[in-house]
Image 1 (cartoon, one colour):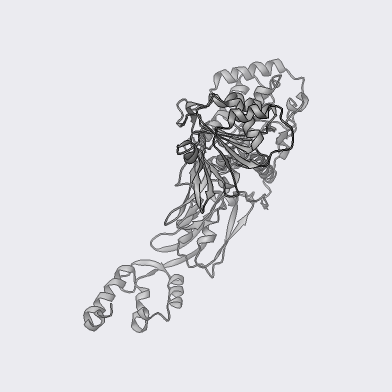
Image 2 (cartoon, helix red, strand yellow):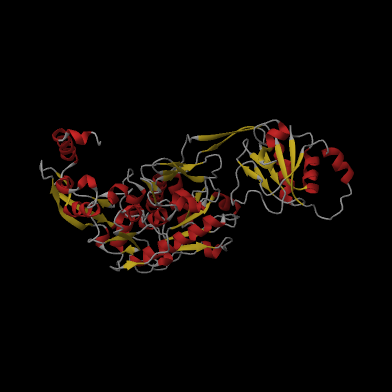
Length: 567
């Protein structure tokens, strides 16, 4: 473990000069031509809540929007309204409906659908009141929001009458007319996704962490896949940082360029004479609110949202030569995203401890930290910076390279460390007596963690560094011979591929082609012992390859024409 730094008089001006030189030298990895998502709004508005409140809002917006529909979702309070007659006169011509428990609201700016149950069938509220297929905007003034989301979709505003937020909403709603666009924040690579394979359910980390409910699991005839509703996505980045394989990739910026940027920034800072570097991850909004810049040795990495970077980036910054990494809390961070970040922080700290480093190298700052806390010098000296990671590597490959470097610079414990669930690290335990080496788990594994043998030897091999604990192998094993063993092994064996079971291939009794294993054949014979198709001499077909088995059936039919009538 590196020794604590030797404290010397801090030359903050020199560090500031080095930081500015590094920023001029290293460009932020922005996507200069990001793919966009389009919205179109004509301004047709649905206002929901207590009747008095929604009529107050409608009276304020009268004449500014082409159409307003009122939806009463709760009782009005008993407060007096001196302008009640004027409000009623301004809104009495507006269509008004009373909602019941069957109200359904979904959509986004320019495409909100609201449905009510009436006379045993669902009534499309936009079609019934405005003659349109949908509403463009929703103003929700109810005590309980109709869409209980931490990040509601664009075009939906939940507030309370009489608040400053309500006043701001009433002032800006008329501006939400026309064509709009937003950058498409994430993309999904189904080939890397561990959510589902061959009908087996696996990883759900992205679904569990999206504060906007913009992700969904779509089912088909064979399996399921993850889809992103780009119109509802806010670009919080939680899905991408939670995804253990990199199947969901954040685009603003992309994860590999961001990791490369961290390394180049720290290199440029050192070469410009900077000392004691600390990397602080924070949101752009939080940085904009700060009244004074950070000390010269604090290198800020401002993101769209704090969740756009995860443990792979935090640890990569340490491996690139940062003395500490600090995560800046933000009061505006959605609770779901904050819980994920806190879990990932605990996971990363355990990885550091397992590899022989002080977990205090990775710390949280309060939502409103004082300058002393923010600008403190790192306690530990920076680690030697590692060589630049291969740009074409996957997320898991880059993380493994970072962990390997941290292990080389530390003193790994050599044992398995428990991690907070559901951390994407661990091994599997295989019951060799039950395993038939059918290779089903190998086919299901979305990473290179599991591999098979060759034409002459049936084998099940495993590399722990690639295992993301998705559970597909455990769920898909027909013999229930696999069990997950979560945790982080701080030993060289984590990087090695080890054989869990191995058998010579079973050769076809007719042509000699290897096609299965002896244990597989024995299991099939046991399960099909009473099957009439494999009774008597036909039992030998189970020891034939697929081609010879078909030939044997046809030869039997040719010898016994009467059997053809039974086919």
